[in-house]
Amino acid sequence: MTKRKNDFDEFMKEVEKEAADAGESDALRAYGEHFRLALQVIRIRKNRKWTQQQFAKASGVPQSEISRIERGQANPTYRTLQQLAQAADLRVEFVAPPRRRTSSRATNA
Image (tube, rainbow, N blue to C red):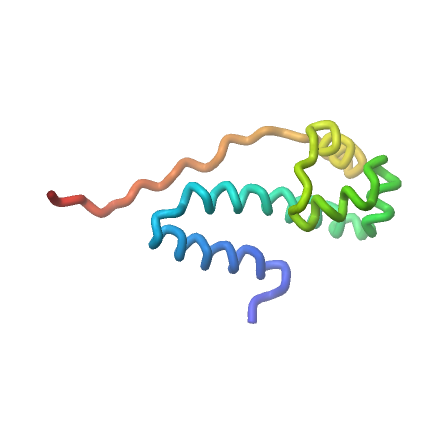
């Protein structure tokens, strides 16, 4: 069995493979990005050994909102993300997504 912290990554790899086979990769990418934010917030909090309540106190973001973000049920504003980042001595940055890999298979008509 994989380590718990890698469960999400392994799950996403399996889903990506199935989605690619079904031609649903765009929807999957959006789904993965949505939960990637949740996973990042969890990792930031756990790396600092904070409870959600401690993170809430440090950031000024309600604990209930942190919980919703971590469950992938929230759509946090930039301001909320900024508050969480500042509490953890981080900054919010926009990063270009990785380039799509093109298929090496040649298509024959």
